[in-house]
Image 1 (cartoon, chains in turn yellow, red):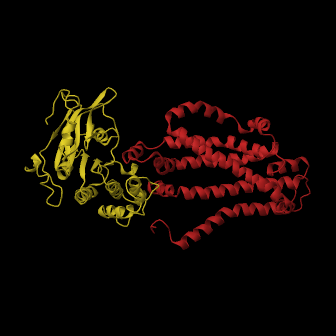
Image 2 (image 1 turned 180 degrees about the vertical axis):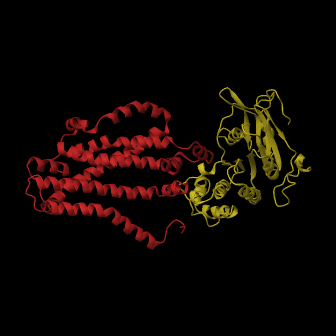
Image 3 (image 1 turned 180 degrees about the horizontal axis):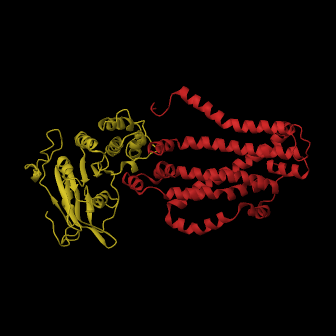
Length: 269
Length: 271
């Protein structure tokens, strides 16, 4: 998909291919002509792309390109002004149960009156029986490097550890797709590198599709099987790199997608 | 529990003793001064502290305990608890719905502007003389700080926390219990503390006007019958009651909001 200067010709009405998403079981999340205005200001002027099952897709764009707006529309937190998001065959009108969000500002998304353990457990209450929870919490905390730290409160931990806890909370919820909104924007460079590798690791371990929004192109290229670039003002379309999936992620991922056309060429910059 | 939060036990105990001494020396000195200064007093209005403590012992540890102290404490607790529960409950509902908030705003502002003692004549008409009238005056007069602070605390929820609760599909009950109420906790407790103080004021005032027992009744009655040591003793008892109530309240607040102290310390306010 290439950038277009004009308003998109393709709106949801012209393109009722929601059924196509159902037909192709590899497509997990599909944006169809997604538009968002804040009052008279148009932020997103028709964005189309799809996320396939098992992919790690980075959405990159400069400040003000509507990255967070796009993510909120995908997560069902914000109603689009036009177009729609299809998640697992269903149009998203409210936050789907199989979707989790890791927010940018960990200090404002973890609850300071709860320990890490309680924070991770809270969203699980509607999804997992009480007996199942401890083992699962244990395993996600272990996976993000917070094993044995469940008793700490968020404010007793460094920023990096807090974001690990937020990631653990997302993973414990067992989503089919994890949306991450510039999760490492507020941590120092070294922590950031650790957390990037952590995300790559847990993504394999928990077999999660990840949509990772960032303004940092290096980060996007490092992490993503595929990079989607938001551009235009207002953001009209998304230029997408050829997928390297499963090129980067080697045989460790169980549900690879051999049929994906973009699998073969490795993304090179 | 993590060991990093709690200091070593011995150090904590030493600190507590120090704090107690630091707080106790001035009241102790003042009491001693009062005791010695008033020992030879012959003034009718300033009886010796010894005679006041004598009255305290005979009246308040004797028949006064059951006749005046217990009823007062009971009414005070009942009024305060009604005001607290109703204030938090109503505040939660009003704070959660912007429409209700807009609708309730003028009436709440009007009612809270009424000085509570002004309700006494109406209360007398409606409830007559007796405990239910005293309790009603406390509940109605002291509810406002808690109500207003709860409304404010509930609506002050960080939008990102709201998004978090939506994205993780927390039920309304979970949202209230785990997110909204704890978030409003510091403000709710600030309101409750004022409600507590107003409750003590109102129990005394309402007992002075519309009761046949209780500390307020005792104090006014002693004054009108020139029982001066009794007047002093009742006043002291009231002060003690207020002090103890506040002490218990602060304990409770510290326990419920124990996370907040750590959060404040960690965000550098102690730097």
